[in-house]
Image 1: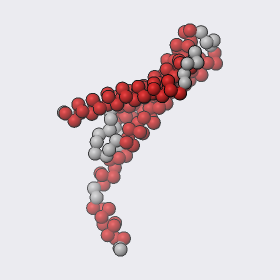
Image 2: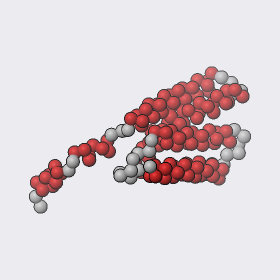
Image 3: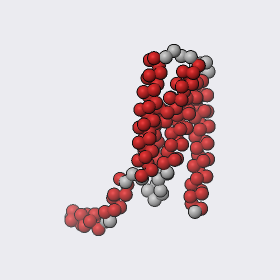
Image 4: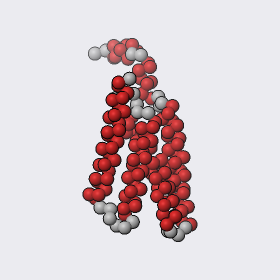
Length: 152
C-alpha cells in the first residue's frame, strides 16, 4: 500500500477536528486556578496550625476547615481529568460548578474520616459506606442535571 494515500486522507480531515480536544473551557481554567489557591492556602494553613498551636477546640475546628480547603483544592485537577477522560466526545464537558461540587464531596469525605478517626471509630466498612453515600448522592444530582440539559 502506498503511504501517499494515507497522507491524502489525513489532509482531507478538517484541522479543527483535531484541535477541539485540546481546548480547555474558560470556566475550567477559573476552577483550576481556584483549586491551586485552595490547595496552597489549605496546606500552608494546616502546616502553620500544626506547628504553632496547641490542639484545643477552636484549633480542631480550624483544622477541619483547612483540611476541607486543602483536599478540595488538591483533588480538583484530578476530578477534572476524570470528567474529561470519561465524558464521551460528542457530549459537552460538565461545567466548572460540577467539578467543584465533586471535589467538595471528596474533601467532605476526608474531613469526616479525620473526624471519625479522632475517637477511633473509623474502620473500613464505615469509610466504604460513607464514600458510597457520597457517590450515590452525586450520581442522582448529576443524572438530574443531565436530564434537564437534554430537555432544553
